[in-house]
Structures are given as structure tokens and as C-alpha cells.
Image (cartoon, rainbow, N blue to C red):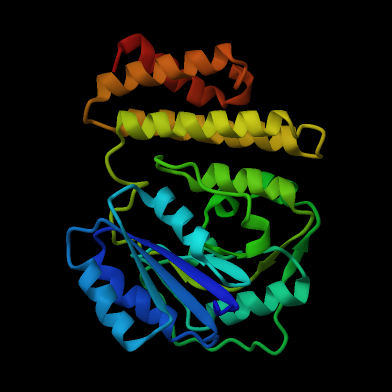
Length: 316
């Protein structure tokens, strides 16, 4: 008979031994202890697995799943497949969380009745945090948003990341990340928000993003990553085409796709490695998406359009 927990914490791990102990320690010392910690070792070649095994010997809440290197999206999906908790919480293995994070978010979810609860204070997430601060949890404060898509329109970045939220497991039963791509969280979250009627945010800084580590987002931008953006854009476009009768769905699709195109253009502009190849690939993809009616020039700021045409004309 499987044991049910209040929260399943899912951690994809790939070569983050330098940060992993801090991450695991921050989770295992939580004030809410009724959790399972699902660690998916994604074919690490450093000593990440050894660290996991040492922690698992001391704490039976840790469950280790080993897989060949398949990417973060596959690892997260595997965690979702085996999770038993009432709620799901994602943590990146080079980050850490406040010692009351899970208790506060769980109480906010139970009190509000919302299927998704998020922390608002994204801008304070940093390696330079104080995990010693004590929050009063007798009366959790939260803000209720009766139209999550409208909230997403005004908070594109903070609403699009996967790791600042607690999810009711039942709403994720038919949802999985697009496998094999980078930046898989934004299409997942953007589309998921169309399925909920309410969304709660809490004014606490509870997740500590590691700005020391060179993450997926800030590493070399390749043609693979560019094409992964295109995959996410197409997925989001096709999904919301069938949802445009939902209030704000059309606006969210347009704004989120425009934000992703802007991000691609800026990343290609700044990337010195294989720059000409990236420009050619970007041009080909955007022209094709334009033909498909996925985006229009009026969707983007003039500055970004000008930057795109300038790159295309110069060829670099």
C-alpha cells in the first residue's frame, strides 16, 4: 500500500553536485515534514548520485530515480508519473527554499481552495538570502486572482516559471511537459492557466534562485534551443486557437508568443558562437511562423522588428 503525502517535491538533477547538498538540506528541514522528495538523476557524470545516495540513507523521504540523460522535461514528467502527494512542488537542484516554504504554500492552498498558489516576490530571489527569517503561519495572507489569464498578461515572467508555485496534483493528471526541449516551463504554465478559475499569490520570498550557477537560460544559445522556442510557440498557438472563446485567451497567446520571439531575437543578437547560422535559422523559422499566422509584425515592438530586419539584412 502506497503512502500518501501532503506534498511531492520533484527535483531534476544533472551535474549540480556543487549545489545539491544545500538544495536537499533546505527541503529536508522544512517545517512541514509530511513530504516525499523525488530526485530524478538525469545521467549525471559528477558525484551528484553519490550525494543523493548519502542523503537517502539518512532520510527515507527521498526517492531516487536514475535515467539516462534525457533532459529536464523528461525528468520532471517522470517525477509527475510517480508522485503520490496531494500537491506538487518543483525545485531546481541548484536552488534552495526557505525552511517554511512548503508549510506556507500548503496552508495558502488549503485556505484559498486554489489549485495553484505562487509566491509573488520573484525579484528578491537570490543566492544572498536569509533562511533564518521566521514567518507567522497562523493567518497566511494571500491575494486571490479570479482570472488567472488576466494575471498572466500583466506578470508574464513571474507567472511563467515553474518553480515558484504549488500545484494540486489532480489538475496535473493530464498534463506533462513537452519532452526533449529547453524552456519547457513557459508553454506548460501558459496553457495550464486556462484550465483554472482562481489563482492565489502570497507576498513572501520563499524560493531562492541561484544566480551564481550558469543556468540553461543564460548558457550558450544554440540552434537546438532556438528550435525549442519554436516548438513551444507552436504548441501554445495551437492550444489557444481552440480556447479563444475563453476571456483573455487570445491576448495571452499573442503576448506570450511575442515575448518568446523577442527573447529569441535578443539571444541571437548577443550570441557570438555560430551567429550567422543562428540568424539564418531564426529568419527561416519566423518567416514560416508568419506564413502560418502564428504572429504578425504588429505584435512586436518596433525596436525588436528593426533589430530582426537589421540582422537579416547583414546576415549576422
